[in-house]
Image (cartoon, rainbow, N blue to C red):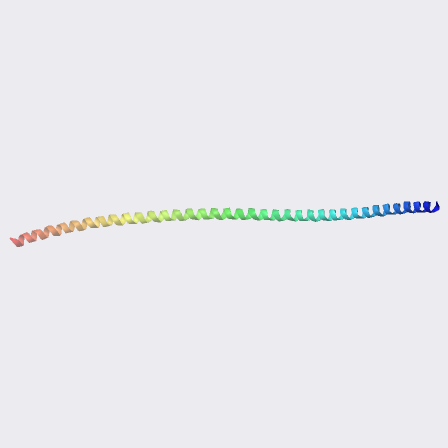
Length: 132
């Protein structure tokens, strides 16, 4: 019966030893996983922070580009308006010159018609006198 008792003590001791060892291993694994989770969360937080910074920079750059585009659009509109105004002024000046030249040509035409009528009358008179 001694051997049975000895075996029973041994099993109790061995099972206690295994429980302690398993508990220690479990605690070690738990610490390892907690460290891994903390490291992963820290890395994740750093990446999120970096991405937020990049997003803010991109948004600031976008805003700057939009402001520049609006400024250039306004300049373009202003230049178009100036060019349109200049073109209208040029057309009006050319029309004024054309109307003035037309008036001068009409007056010249009237004068030439009048001279032609006088020459024609003189020619008829001379022809009449010569025929007589």
